[in-house]
Image (cartoon, rainbow, N blue to C red; front, top):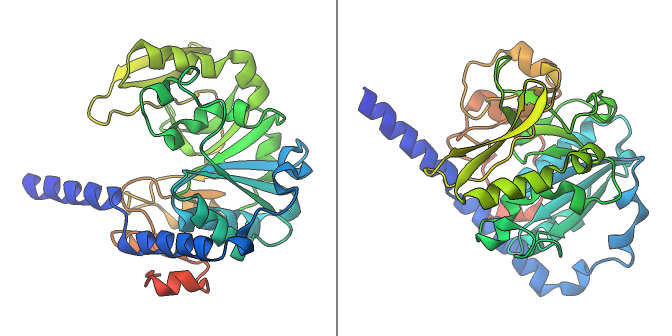
Length: 326
């Protein structure tokens, strides 16, 4: 029984780490469209300098992803849940390989209600080997950009970081007014007694980040020993960093541990826990498919998958060409 469970877990991890044929097909089709019709997707004049992109009075989201369908679901669900969509700005960052796919998708399917989307590649000027240990170590840049939010958004005071495996069910604008008590990050704890925090929905006070020099601390521990798992902990009410060996995943991560958000903002586990109560899901502002059973995979749990698929733009012709199962 134990062996069967281990084999099942292994198969699940392999499936989660593999790109489904439909997603690969979709990315290729979108990139082919970009190459075939460059004039249709040329950057609009003034688009990169639009004042909304750096207006601190608007609600700004950062989403890092190489999965265009997942990113579109996050945007679609957030816009549909917003009381005033025109005040919401989504900064989507992807790698150079998927940039064209994102450009085509969101040009053909822009958000409704006046919401704005910015598509950016992960090749920011500040990400160079002399400044970033992640670049120097050859680590995936897209996985580490969340630790450079103040550099990415120098004119913003706050930004909401959303993972690409979440679905928004309620207006999130109140999060920008959440009292972080001068702390860097508002997030959901793994448990009431835990010192570690979970990604999915994080509101970052960028002014506090700059004041606390969080990026500099991150660099310090990256330089201390490559391959360590880095966790910023809240210890006795003060910021501290702890480096832990995590050779199995080779991951370098940083959890900015600060102010707890109310549990109703963020319900997790839809990618691994089959027993989440419907009342919790219904009350959640955001549901998070963290775990191996992502909603775009065949191994997704059927009782939750509809929460995600209802925000997929099924009329998008390229989805139909790639037999994307919904």
